[in-house]
Length: 125
Length: 412
View 1 (cartoon, rainbow over the protein chains, first blue to last red):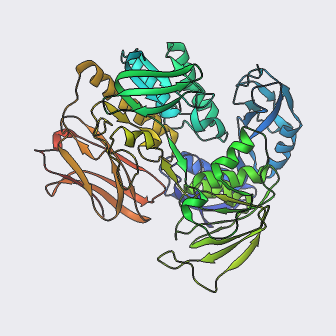
View 2: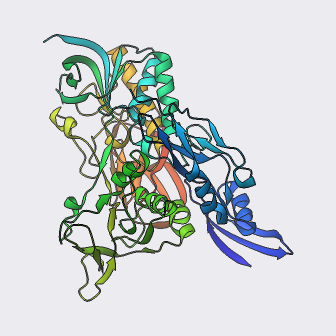
């Protein structure tokens, strides 16, 4: 089978052409071309088996100089789980001060990814 | 009024200004001041909460606020003076800078000035879309600030005009927060943002992208009720009879960025017609000696990593200027063929290796970017694809240059 991909790993955005075979649940890549680095081939393999993405969002902060702090996942999760993870993130409520790097949810929904604060919010003066 | 003496004054505390200040300090230029008009340092990165920054500069991917924090932290550790809530209102061509602060007006005489004001978004006014004037029409960056800084959800049913990167990133962000993004319309026959954003911001969420279409009417008296979209011909003129109505309460514009150069113009800095930023030489020095420019105020970048790297190169040159009082002359002009939209820099000295940043003006496949002097090839780069959305960079070995004949960039 043949399929074309736009790699999202880095800003190069390589257009990759992949020739592959499905054996049971495993993917066998016969030929991968167009990628500038080997992460492209890894991306294609992951896309064929189970596409994964990271997401970023915000969490409410009370008593801070800003009403929210930004968060992101430190590892990608399956594409189909994105909105479930968003729901978990929306449940969170914090009070200032909040510091970047704090893990808010460890191993969210058992997917092996953490929700991490990416912006410090100080207490409002 | 007392005029304070300074080595370097940096206008803007975003990624370009911070990277320049930190690098200047490292080069031993410590009598510097960064002036930022917002309450916080970090510039636009503060609202860019998505992932994907830092791959080139730091070798790992992070969000905008984290990327900014790296430079803010370094500047703090070094003790570089930064004033926030302060606006530069005038720069003269002999580098006297007027700053309005919370504590009143201050004046500085700097040996060098770094222009790092960034860019702003093109608006509906600049595009002259006909129709009514309801609420609900925002630029992508304004919608981004509402959502990511102020916790305000600006939309339910959304149409996006323009396929710029910020617009696509906002399409995803709005979708994640429960809005319905109906479509993205692009007037050009090709997308203006990066392919990876089409993939991960639009295709992932089933948002269609339509090319060669534009919004030709805006409807609604209090709040936006809908827009009319038309197909356009090859001269980007709407084709009568192709109008389609889309019901929506919000129209997001992602139709380009413009370097913010009002201060530069007052200082006598010459701008380039294509980039709308300053015309600079390989040292990022403008036509006014000692006034330098880098980052999005010089030319709009796709990636902040290249903004940082450019500002760091600027700092190396500005440090030399402060220490030596001058930089080598740059008599070798850079020109380009019809496939090239612009280059930065516009002139070089021919005495050191330099880097050319450029964009093509239409998508092309299997091309070679070639630099020639008097018909002789001095550098080239092969590319599988060249698209306007992606800045192209290559370095040139100065030893290959002879005399002061013009350099010509062509894409073939």
